[in-house]
Length: 289
Image (tube, rainbow, N blue to C red; front, side, top):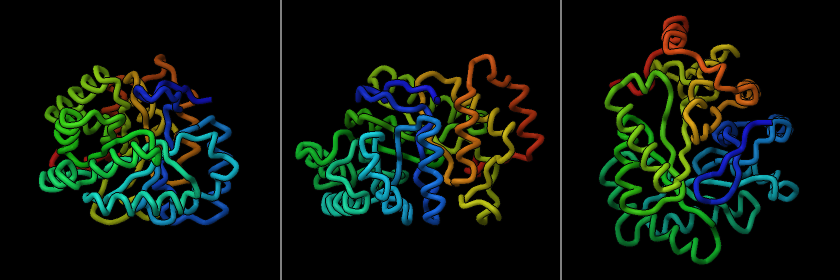
């Protein structure tokens, strides 16, 4: 079974690997049923999906009648306005076939203008605060992608006491000094405030402008078990963080196998990780690193 730790100050003990619902962007029913068996086998008890992930919410909704109690259920919205978020939440509830959600996250804030709209009057945050007061959701989170993520997350948690945050984290990104400093500031602030810290892009290999053949993700991931081990072990060595699994159901068993075997004695060295980068021709998926 994969280790479980407190998800911030929510009191929920979540598996350190969270199932990333982006894997169901374009999945068949047989893949969905097989994935549930895998999650239960490894003790994954936290699902992270989004309205924007194609059929993901609808497919996960197939599990909820029987398994709602087994999962901390989180979704996301790309809407920035009060009205848009309220409609988005209602749609998510219907697709997921549930009456309430554990966590709703304002998703993928990158630009200053959308941040201001989200945080301003009649913005997304106002809608989530109201929905929480009505018991529709328990917790509120925010996510950011790209190289600006630490900056966006830091100013967000200064503005509002979010229950969770999410941003990219992998060895190659942390070789960028500016990003590394920003990430560690986020990590420190989250520990101080007891905010759950979720990470993505753990096993990213490279992105060359087109969707890679053979994968359902926009970037090419590492796919060999030993490579996934190294990348996953390296990330899990940072205490308290959660890893959202990559958006490909075929890689999920390998990621979960790595996480189940994780121990500090298995964490690769910097030399090991540099060798991995060279061996697999890894390149930053956010080009300006």
